[in-house]
Length: 161
Length: 204
Image (cartoon, rainbow over all chains, first blue to last red):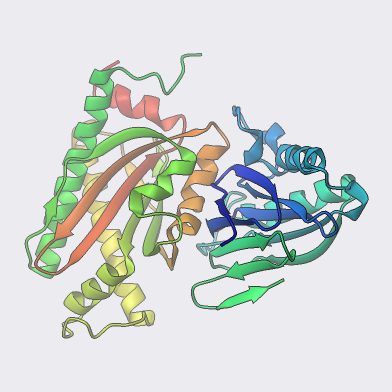
């Protein structure tokens, strides 16, 4: 049986086939995967916030889109992935509770998704699939043998993007 | 600037006492509504790494019902009442006078009943708190979601995540063994509110 590697909140893991990387219970957080289909090397990052420059203090770069993506990118390249072949998929970015006077904090899911896409584009990485928004949680996993990115929900079943 | 997370044992005790008083009042309120005995444990007051918080309620993919209230006032905070899905269903049965086991999903009426419980618990909690500290704290209307614990906790943790890597949580577990109902009540002060709270209980 292939390895199932857990990725916690504000964390990332990289690996190669036949491992599967999984992250449980994303709300407004985003699960970003990078994958090189030829070498079957990839990574999964679970970010909480869009922008490290807006934060007051943190020693954990994996918490933010702007610092987490480059970190994971370096690691997958170090494992032997080739940058021009890398493709990205992302899921999450929900707004779990609806309030009439939603503050910026409540809309952080949307801002997370935008920040992830911006930093991926800046690094010249193609985004080939996305499942973001809504008001429900997601568990995401990427199978490094096939590159299949599965998104599980409670009421909306499971899909592959 | 003094590190906010650098609290003395005495200060942690003071926060625990705040939690105790608030939770005691809430437990009494809940007990009166459902007319059953409600037990509670001694509140846990702890700084935990943000990524470990979902484990307090059984892991990030455990299905829970969460009732969320934003608290305004001098010490802005978040309140989150989390129940395992089954507990929430039993609670609805009890509240609406149905046979235990009837509720298998939540309709608008059920959600409204659960939100009201969130309202009452928070009101009782904050009231006790006010009597003790004279810090007035006003809860927003409650919002509810049934989903993965990790996803629901995100809402609270995001705000803390902007300030640091640790979350200060005051947590109490409510339990009615007879009814098979249990729930976790979290008061999570915003960073910056902690100082106000500690000053209010008179330990500097």
